[in-house]
Length: 237
Length: 237
DNA sequence: ATAAATTATGGCAATTCGGTGGCGACATCC
DNA sequence: GGATGTCGCCACCGAATTGCCATAATTTAT
Image (cartoon, rainbow over all chains, first blue to last red; front, side, top):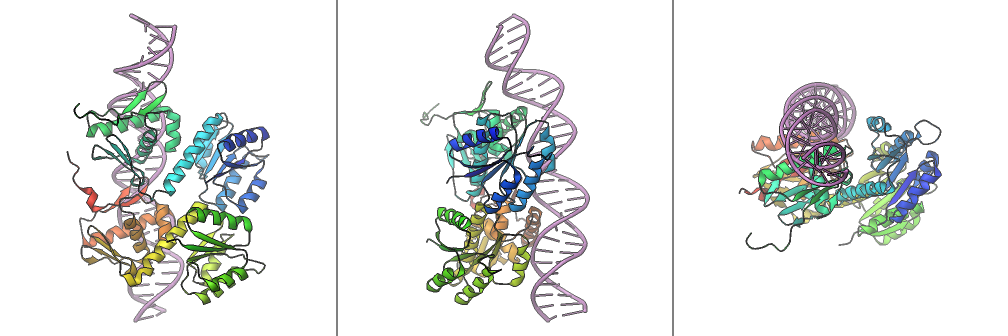
C-alpha cells in the first residue's frame, strides 16, 4: 500500500527537494506552500503523514497554528515538525502539540527518509500487532505483539524503550545500527550518550540471566550490532 | 468468511479512499453515491455493515433518512455514521437512530479499520447467541453471548464497558493492548486516564472474589495484557 | 608510546506514568 | 422524586523509567 505524505513548506526549493526524495522512495507526496491550501486539502483527505515547517508563512510560527488546525481534523495523523534552528526544539517540544517527531532542516535527506521509514514502521507495528509473530535468532526470541524478549527460555524484563532498541537491532541481524538509527526506531529524541546508557542497561539485564551473554556488540565509531548467531551450531562447544 | 460492507457517501474521493482501504483488509465493499441507489440494492441484499455519511445528498441530513429506511429493512444491521464536523456528534447520538458507531470523517484510515474490526468482533460475540459459545483461559471463562465472565466458578459482576474491556484483553491473551485499542474494542471515546479507572474497577471486582488475582498485567508505558495462565510456567534454570 | 576519540559504568535527578480515591453528571429504576 | 449504578475525569502520590553527567576504560590515530 502506497502511503501519502503531505509537506507544508513555503520555500519552494526545499519543498521540491523533499518531495523528490520521498517520491523516490515510493511515497505519494503532496506539497503545499502555505497553511491555507494545505488545510483545505486536509479537510478532504488526511494524509498518512504530515511534515510541517515551523517557520511557515509571514506569521512568526504559522506551523504551530496549522498543527492545531490539523489536530482538530485528526487526532491521530503523525506529524513531523521541521525547524530552521536547533534552539527551537525546546520551545516546540514544550508546546505539546502532539507532533510525533521534530527535525532541524539541516539534516540530510537520507536522515529525513530514515525518520519517515522508522515512523511508518512503528505505526505499522502497532496497527498490526494482532498477528502472532515471532522472530528467532539463535538463543533469542522476540515476540513483537507481546513486547516480550526471551533469552534461552527466560523472559528478559525490558522496558518499552529497551524493547524497541532490541527490536531494531534484532530486526537487522549482523548489521550495524547507528545511534541515530536506534533513536529513530525507538522514537526517542535524545543524545547519543543516552543510547549508550540504554545499551548498558540492556546488557546488564541479559547478563543477569546469562553470564556468557555477548551477542550485543559494540562497533567502535559506528554503533551497535546484534551478532548473527551461526545457525549451524556445533554439538559440543 | 468475507464480510460485505456498503459505503454511502457522495464525495467520490472519500468514498474511493475508504473503499480501497477496506478492500485492502479483505472486505467486500460496495460504494453508493446517493441513498436511492443504496436503498435499491439493500432491498436485494443486506450487507454486513453499512457506513453512511450524514451530510448525504442535497437534503440537510439525508443520511438520517437513509438510516430509517434501512432500519425498516433490517433492524439489526450494524451502521456506522460519518460526520464532517465533530459538533454533529451530539446531535446524532441524541437522535437514537440505532446506529452502532459515530465517527468524524477526519479520523485516519487505520482508525476506521480498527473501528470496523472491533465492531465486527462485538457483533460476532453477541450474535453467537444460539451457539452458547464460551472461551476458557485458565481460571477464566468468558461467555460472549451472555456477556458473562466467570472467575474460578464465580460470576464476576461486570458492567457492559468492563465486559468489553475484558473481552478485548482475553481475546488476545498475552498480547499487549494499548489504551487506544481498548477504547476501540469497547467502543468508547474517552481519554487514556479513564481506561486506567476502568482497569482499577475491574481489578477490584476480581480481587473481591480472589485475593490472589493478578492475571491483568500492566505493561508500563504501553498498555495492559491478560497474562495467559499456561505461559507463566517455570522457566527456572 | 602518547594523545585523541569513543564507549562503559555508576549514579543522580527529572520526568513520565500508573494507581487510587473521590466527585459530579447522567441514566435508570422504583 | 429519590435511590442506585455507571461512567468519565481530576488531583494527588508513589514508583518506574529515562536522560545525562562525571569519570574510568577502551580503542584508534599519530
